[in-house]
Image (cartoon, rainbow, N blue to C red; front, side, top):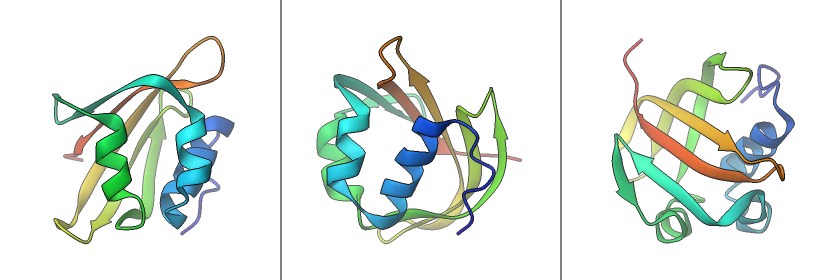
Length: 107
């Protein structure tokens, strides 16, 4: 999958780690207290991605908005199948991701 559309360096590293299921690359990009919201519902970030990494990935990136922080694309989950999704990253002043909103996208 092509990540050339990803213009934010931190987001690009996160998506590349997601794509390969690389926990050692994924978790250090986030703050210790990173928040995760799935379709608006708060989830435990660490628990969710311990299970998801290696089993979920983008199959295409269709659009990037908000200065490279919001990603929309087709997604595959071994558990939930294929669907359109969004990942909206929020990065703090220290360059760490402190919030990630994910969910099904309509576009």
